[in-house]
Image 1 (tube, rainbow, N blue to C red):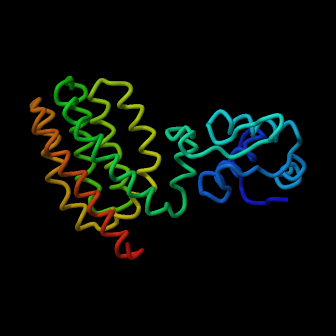
Image 2 (cartoon, rainbow, N blue to C red; image 1 turned 180 degrees about the vertical axis):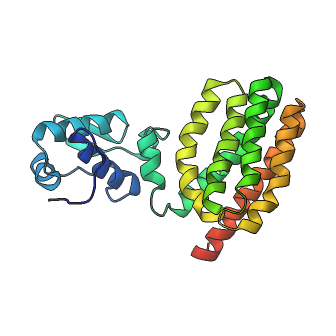
Length: 240
């Protein structure tokens, strides 16, 4: 029987967490069948109803498909709900692959400059104040790598919130799940953290002044630096 810790909650959560993580990590290949029900019951120490409910949840996330004649099989990644919070968490927990790390850095370059532009166009006084407060927290935590990571996430979230666009904010909330993991890779240098502050400040000022082009351009510099940091780390640690 499996003994690692599982999330608190319904017993079918054991099945969802363990089996979902294996699928997303690639331990179970697309097109292959999952272990039969009796094996899952024995492995996870749950009843048949919990196994079936767990499989049903993973079907809903696009990871599995069930057919009467073919059993339960792993679906290709193109069918997964990639912005599902648990799928993102499994994808980026532990040591993400080189591909997944690069995908996230590229997504930021594609998404965040536009969000900063919209924020500069839409931000009201309350939104500007929230960005300024987040900027102050960045300055206050520059000497503490762990606190800086959280402050940086909060700063970028405040910009997405300032866009007054619930779809943009939702996407950021999901992406932040992955960012929290991979930022551990390249936001550890206190000196480097301090070097990034001027560009963050420029973004905040541009949004406060409703200079949408300046906000977009400066945010592009911020995320391009982050992508370069990621590429450098991957080259050093993995020889890519």
